[in-house]
Length: 176
Image 1 (cartoon, rainbow, N blue to C red):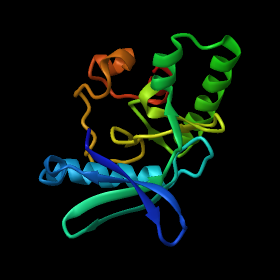
Image 2 (cartoon, helix red, strand yellow; image 1 turned 90 degrees about the horizontal axis):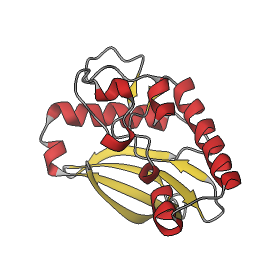
Image 3 (tube, rainbow, N blue to C red; image 1 turned 90 degrees about the vertical axis):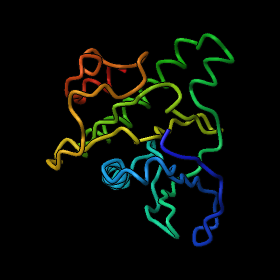
Image 4 (cartoon, one colour; image 1 turned 60 degrees about the vertical axis):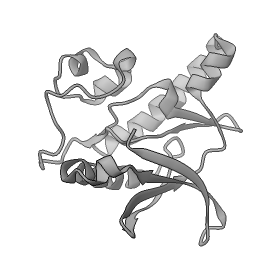
């Protein structure tokens, strides 16, 4: 994707965090960099137990970064790959938690656009955390930085309107 993620210790909070450092390809492209900042700031507004927390967004010595809550666990994709099948009750519980997280995202006017098992993390306590707002956009933003007509996201999880290059909305995330 857009960069590399590292495990770090947040000195003020005295806890583990994930630090995503943007790749040089992103930082050399003013439009991508502006989109990243806007989307990271939008994701930072969301305060919900099913959304990974964003603590800081910045640039230091030419390195653009985002500091997020560290999720000690596995992705839903990893769990599906290991187990092959989830019990119906567990699948329903996970879907309900994902829906609650998406409800908070959508209530804040944000469309994720890349909901997929790899972007759903489960903590060791089996709690859902939605991550990776790299393709998200603020539905209220009129800056024109989000490209309509471009196909963005993971093909297997694209909603029909996204596959047709049309504007995604809350239904697109639910479809995915």
